[in-house]
Length: 584
Ligand code: M6R
Image (cartoon, rainbow, N blue to C red; front, side, top):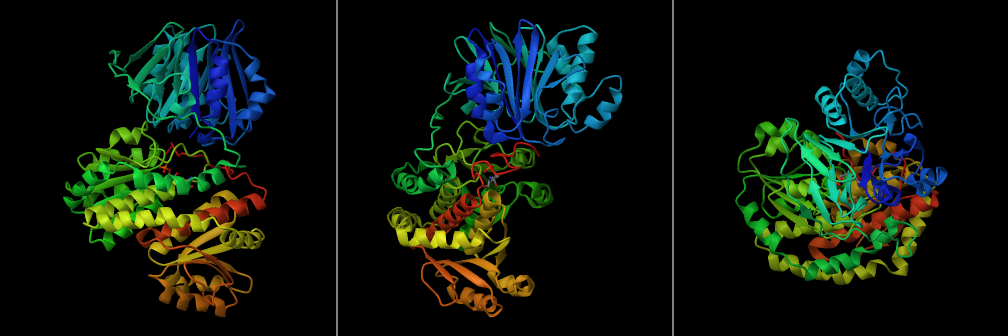
């Protein structure tokens, strides 16, 4: 994935970029580095570890330069090491490159660059050597960057600097890049929150753009050297809220924000939902697309739509190609994405370019927000924890509202939403929280846990298990309660634990199946509206009609958070992960 930010202008770049790169850490935190122009040419500082560690180690906030770029890495090609941290240099150290994406033909290019000395295992390094080669033959940095772009395959955006030059050149292809324009200088970055404190004036770059920023200005050309006429946009979202409001982690802060955010939906403008509901009614099949947590949201939406008589299927973006033969012109696609930047979704868009697209999104400035016909914003505020929590619940709520509006059940939908906004406060009470703590202190010592549920409860089980894996590294597996006896039951023996999601609709069948687990000495943590003799630990959740599942989901979030903390893990930065997956 990786995050990139650069500044070139009359001001000192370093304070902007030290701040900016912290706001891009959600894109990866395996290593961090920077390149800046100095009177002695390009200086590169880089190391493994979190952004703040690298800044502290090299006292980067004490450096001064007008022209600089930073990178935070999520390792794809080549292990996490200092030599693989970006910026990546050429043979001479005169050229520095930061890159987001994958050069798919790097091995073949490396062979053709056999005269060069390669010092890293990254695919990025071929870019630095191609630029070096090209500059040796004469020409400008822009021409060399363009030449590199023409030779590499795959979604790759990169920035390049040359010793002694006042220019930063950027190439955008696939991975996001946005230009920020301010009075004294310009930014290029992977994402707006990295510089939105300094300017709200932006240009969204297009694939194939070749951008140059110097101290005095900027230019955008396409690869045919034609000046691009992209319009200037103004950021509306406030990204400045960066503090944890007294909470130890963003994850718990974001979990605790949910009651307030749900209340906000009750009072919000629902016209985008009404407009979208009429679009659904004209469709043959509704495909709901999402990855990870957003796929679970899609499952919830599709389930609810089917219950309301709408023909709906949830698919993962990676499977879209397999489905494409059955896609019809009048099928509607609902794209669910918190970040709006998930590469797997962006890369399936050409398959559905003729179709009407709705978006359930959190970021108004994202690529997907610009790609869909009707964006529905969940207004969850910036989600900083790597584990999606508040965006899961809010996206699910919006989808259920949409489905109920489309099927003529608007009044019932709004009634249940109001009920949820009131009842949710009964979730954060000592009796519930102490049961969650009790369950967490048992799961903390386990290596495996099963999440069981049926129908909608199964979607919550999937999401609960994902959350547990993500932040606690506990092997958590979701299994449909009804299929448990068709094989997985063999895993149950004395001491095995299952978290069971049981709602009023599924209770009768679920309890019968859970008895089979009990009979094999399995232990059960029940997340349900009422107790049962099969539960060893009971966590009571209030009901709220069509939105009861939201409260079950919040309990699973709390449980994962608590296990994470008890295991001494930082839930905001789990190992190997990044907040948004911007490479395929
Ligand atoms: O930004 P998106 O909603 O498109 O992200 C999709 C997934 O990468 C994301 O939901 C991921 O699974 C979360 N980290 C899970 O908590």
